[in-house]
Image (spheres, rainbow, N blue to C red):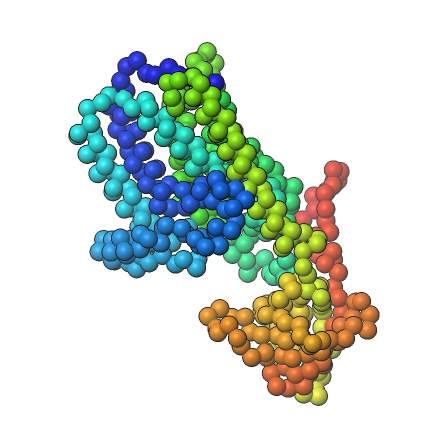
Length: 443
C-alpha cells in the first residue's frame, strides 16, 4: 500500500526549483516527442498496433515543424525540418526541438518560482511521479519485448553473411553482434520487461527505476559507442530513471554505502483516502499487464510474420554460387574485373534478392515470381515504384541443390548455372556453444 503521509515541512529552495524544472522539461519532452505517443499506443494495448499505422512514427512531433524550422534557421542557421520517413531520433529537428523545450522549461521555472509562494508540491509530486513511471514503463516494456521476442535485432540475413566485416557500419556491427545470439538478446529484453512491469507497481517502482537506470545507461553507452541514432531517446530514458530515483537517493546511499537503516521507499500517495489509493494501485497493476500484453502480442506477430521458421521465404531460398555464366553466347570466366558476371545470388525475402558482383559488391534488387518466370528489378532508393525488369529468367531445379537460370539480362541472352551454398558452412552460424574449450577459437 502506498503511503498517505504528506511532508510536514516545505522543501528547500533548490529542491523546489529542481522539481519545477523537471515538471516543465520532462513533461514537455514526453508530450512533444516519442514518449507520450509511445505510452498512448502502449496503453491501447492490442489496439495500438492498428492505430500506429495511421498516426505514423512521429505522432504530434511533426506539428512542431514551424517552430523548430524557424529556430533552426534563426538561431543555428540550419534546416530543421523533421524527416517523417526516417526512424532516426537524432535528427537536426529533434535536437532543435529539445533546445526549445529546454528554453521553455527554464522560462517556466523562473515564472513559476516568481509567482508561486508555496514551499512544496506534495500532490503534484505524486501525480507527476505516476506520469513519469508510465512514460518510462511503457517504452521499457516495448523495447524489452522487442528483444525478448528477438525482432529488434534479428539474426544476420543470408546476404549479410557474405558482407565483409570492414564494410559494416558501427551500427550494423552492434545489431549483428546482438542478433547473432538470441539468448543474449532475450536476456537483455527480459531485464527491460521486468523493469517495466515493476514500474507499474507502486511497492516495486523504486526497484523498477533502479533496473531501468542500469538498462538505459547501457543503452546510452552502446548508442554512443556504435553511433546509433537514438542517443537523445536513450539519454532521456536515463533522465526519467534518475528523476524517479532522486527522492530516494539519500536512503539508497544509507543502505548500500553506509549500511544504515532507512525509512521505507514508498511512492507518494495519489489521494488522501486509503480506499482510493488501493483502487489506484490495482488500476496501475492492471495497466502494466495490459501494456505488456499489447507489447508482447505486437512483437509476436512481427516474429511470426518475418523471423520464425514458419515466416514466408523465397521459393528459391538460399545462397547460390555461380558455376557457369554465359552471356550473349559467351562463357564468362570468374574474373574479379568482370562487371557483368555474378559471383553469387541470394534469395531470402519472398519479394527480394541480392546478387554479388565479382568484385564482392552486394546489390539488393526486387524479385518477382510471375507465371513461372523470375523478374529482377532495380531497387535503388529514389526510383519510381514501377521500374522495368533488367532480368527476366526462367528457373529450373535439376536437383534440390542446383539451379539453372535462363532468359535475358540487360537485353542479352543469359544462362546461369548455380549450386546451393550450405548456410552452416559459415562459422558464425555453425560454431555454436561449448562448455569446454582447451584453446580459444577466433577466426
